Image (cartoon, rainbow, N blue to C red; front, side, top):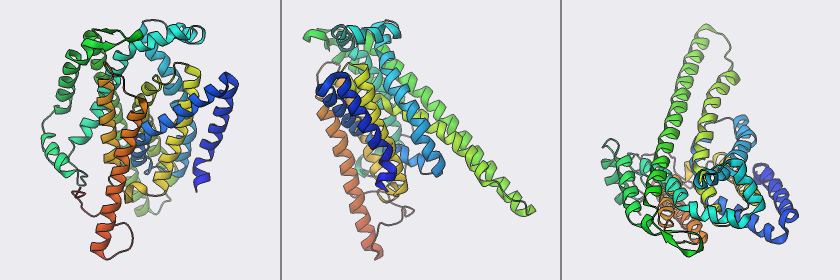
Length: 383
């Protein structure tokens, strides 16, 4: 099972590390290895959230997600997106950004460092919106009841998450952005830049959310229509083409999943700039990590992990919220990437441990031996 699910990830890891040695020797090898681990740790929440959607897809579309989808993830988000970020932030053309990265890495690093406030504001606001929309949603299963229960009640107020995000952005612009860290250790006022970039991140989230909602609605329409066709076929005695029907529904779900997956890639790409400015090594390291994230997503689905450990998704979104806060703080202060990655791992591990405790408690109450059914109504982990 492990080899079948992670086989391609192992192969890509070997090829990527060998390529790194040929490109820059053992130092490049170490950088690619670190980036791979960073991507996995920062994007574990991505796998957890994606698994909740991917579990509805057939094995065929799971394979498409691991093949065609990975090309989109690696070349679109892990290779092209970092270049676009630098080009926009430094106000140069994408081709010029690539040439500068290849020919003058010191100047390229300076541009990236100076552009960090805008990158952090953009990514921080985007991730903050993901967290806020999750935490304000009323759900049957709650992990940290003392936080989630009152926030779910507040979430009934329309546009509350947008209002809070804008307040956080305003406070950030008036505090951290006034002493933004720049190349050479200098600090300058980047309040206007942070405001504009943060608003751009918020707009991007709303656009992505709109697209996601569109695909989700299309999926629901397809599933409803397919159900009606199945019922009509049964009454008339005609055969039903299950493959064609499942394919149409899965196609919309695949598009939805790709949009969502791309949105989660911001944290890994932004975090990679703290490790290296070499776009080739960045693409190799993040690409390897992306493969493991996708394989891990499929593994979570096939093993039914999310059904058994219901608080994993909560932990993943709390990790996203923590990362959003860290990005905004890094506008003025430098925070080691090991701290960023460790916070996410700790939160997800905590949610996993809480899920295990819940399963044991429910099993003891029911007199069973295994994890209790996820269909049982549960409101709190008791943590």
